[in-house]
Length: 402
Image (cartoon, rainbow, N blue to C red; front, top):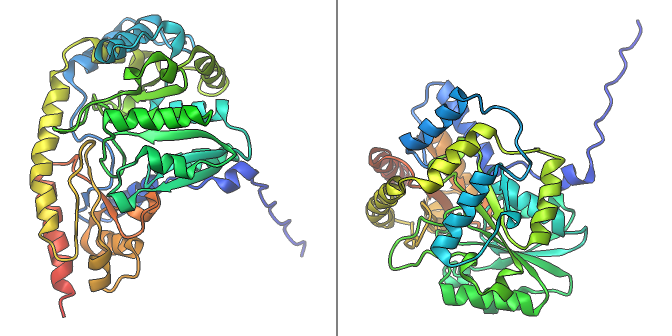
């Protein structure tokens, strides 16, 4: 009998080998699998608003369809949307961005990806907060560069200019800053933020400011953007903005980059050869989001505040959990080292796995963000779901009492 030929081994590129699958996406897949099996899952893993896209934004998208606005646009995005982005940021932060400094992208992630690809060479060092968003180190890996993590656990996850200075290496070319932070909810105060940018400038470094959660800040913390910096510092910073969280538009895939003309021009080149453009319909909807009523944003923020006011104290009442109050975004990032140890789990990953498969509670392991011993819990969910999640955590504790 003739032996069947063996299948070829796919020769993965170096970039593919260095880049991991998104851990947050993996959690989502695992939760969907359990739902398909009939498990009543409570999902605190997903990082998106539980609110629908506001009606006036949806109406603008429907109108774009009715008007057959379904063709290609320029890669940079339509002029009315770029102007709306500039007007929104300039009006809120006193900057003077122009159309040539703005590029519309497919969500904040693509803006960051394009910005890194346009600046970073293999072997460069890129500074990132630790813990930090799961995609930051993977995007750096894709560029065949080295993520240099700045550990912030000792300061309860507050990044400082002194930390940045201590982490700079001779090969440092870029720092990525995320305020409000995913996963910690930390907000960098304006004065400290400026010191960080000044430190980067002193060492001839560039900055990406991820402002995905820009408007979701809880008093007394202050809403702040790199756009508020003086021109000489702003000239080193690319703002990666997104409408996904602010306007509950995660599926519309609309973001923007604002920065020095030369940097934005390179971002645009990469976009033109990859995604081409953001969806035409979504661009029309985004104009409505930025230029019409902001009341839905205020309502979402107030509701997140209400949930945090209940959820954080409830977490801290559970033996083995210690959780600081977030200053922005919509995540709790509790320390669960004692809880894991008391329940017989060696790592937060094991704890997260048990919570999912034994208790139907979706969480994201802190190690995915660079912080073993923590969990990221999204309170972008109903109060009923949050209350049920607390009950399942209590059940875990009760099941392991000695």
